Image (tube, rainbow, N blue to C red):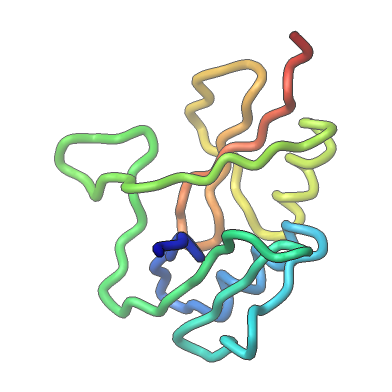
Length: 126
């Protein structure tokens, strides 16, 4: 049996990036004592796949949008929100930056404190 437990994001300081996502994602908590300076694993309420963060001293943030001669993005997070404007403002207040390039009107691309792009979006009624 295999089970995906987390996506891991490198950062210059794992603890600081984990703290940002703990503030951003209500109810998420550190999983089973995996909380150190160089490795932190967080999970949503009720369990499920989480996020982990590891310190990488040689970390370079990815370029957004991508550019051939710059560090490429290897993963990004999509986070559903109820109110796009309100949650974008809250993410910025917690330490995210709004990306200059916004490819869609109904999605906001932000950069976390380590420079990883992530998207906020609302579910569109069908």
